[in-house]
Length: 441
Ligand code: ADP
Ligand code: ZN
Image (cartoon, rainbow, N blue to C red; front, side, top):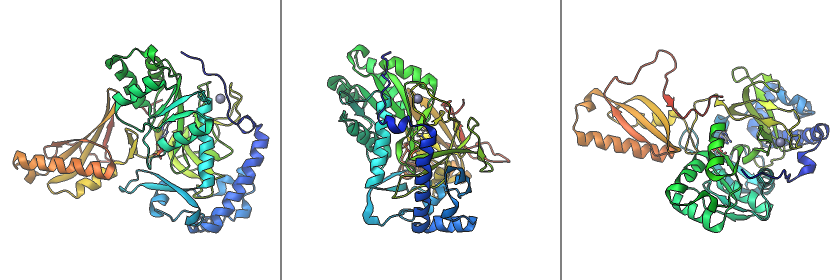
């Protein structure tokens, strides 16, 4: 495997001693809290209810006093309710799929795009990027933050960007080969699929110039790292992010491959007990809660990510001082990520409730076949429908498939099953069988 040189995009900040870093964080946190209190009715209401005034927040040690923000708040305030600036100052909207079919959107000012770009630039440089690189961006371009995020960061570094967007495997490999791409940005599952397709297409891996890749937007494992590194003879680095905070680049791996450095001059990280919301010390596993301290458009205060991980503040071999988060080992809600698209079982339920002839009993079975996620949706027919003609049943099947595709954005294999065959549960219904093995430690 090629060795990644230990390059740091912004050493002054990324390697800053933690005491000086805290001074920056304290200042920015105070400014952010005052900004949202004065400009976002929901934050003012929540803080008033909790009896916290902006003056009570003097530094990061007071963070715990602030109320949490949730995904449901973004949904309830969709699309502009959480903006902290007039709309004229917003220059970009990005989004990801939400629970109701409506996306969760975030508005970015010029400053926010700049902050995000810097975070991605740091991530790519940690993975070895520089002016000489050709970066193939295979994340989707659009509302999804992956494509444009990686694009902006690679441009900032001065690399050549190849904005392929997702899909069309043959073309991806042909361009990667012919242009001599040196870095790849995409989801880890698609990277493996590309790697496996390479030989089938008659290429010799040695003809490729790839040296590293930044892979994120979905959970992955050390086994997947080994596989990617072997398939392409590269270094594979993890990159984490979410639309609500910025997009990819919130945290990224360095050549030490021992956790992802969170860009702590822009984002504060806490781990809390998912059940009680109590902050937990470094090292303990819990829910990641993030607070933006330099965004102006739609700042997020103590945002519950639902992602489970641990934080490690011990010095890293690379010289960076920012805290590292572990891989995501699970989620506190039932969100599934299928081929990079976030979805909730409740979305499927709402589709089924609107269709005559099926019962609201269903099971989602997720597998990974040839490194690609497959979603099977088993749905129970009603007694009346069960005795109907094959043609009618096929019609229902198609209707469900189409509606899932349009509401959730994922192609599913819908399988209709006889009445009362899906196991009933006395407690919380078990609706998901995930065979991908991604979320265990
Ligand atoms: P993104 O554009 O980063 O996919 P979304 O807002 O669509 O952003 O989804 C964010 C969610 O994706 C995160 O809360 C997390 O569950 C998941 N995610 C993103 N990056 C990673 C990663 N590197 N490892 C595990 N999960 C990730
Ligand atoms: Zn490091």
